[in-house]
Length: 202
Image (tube, rainbow, N blue to C red; front, top):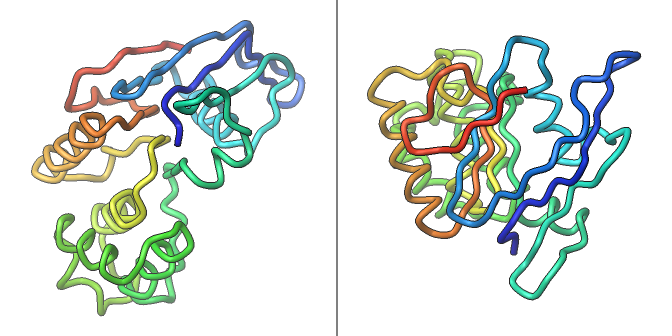
């Protein structure tokens, strides 16, 4: 179980361009970090690097457990969620089938998927094809796996962007509950998170 994210002297390139250099930070259980900066500054790239989808050109990304360092691959596989700015949903499935798939893939079950749908106001939409959902509804469907298959580290890319005011407030409540339970959040966003968070500008 991840209790801390530890980044040391990290450097990441995109092509010939170095996005950032010598980046070090520690994020402990119960803390949230927002990533700020202009478009193209490297916010999404940093999230993808933490998730193990991009190899850094220098430095390390590590995860600590209660008893010490965790194997990075094991930690990512078992205890990390990445929700990108694209929702990564199969549009030909029904919302219910997509949520069931996402939940099962991440270790949840039918009961936890149903509870997540209820919390996020999706229950009446589960019979619709994903392609029929609005942008905000698709975002809530993508976020539902955070609840359907709980994991400690949430990596969120522009999580608030398509949500209306009521669902932004709801997401803030869910984030606060996650942090209170010892979770960690790293979010790339142009909008302030609806809860206290450290900020890192890239």
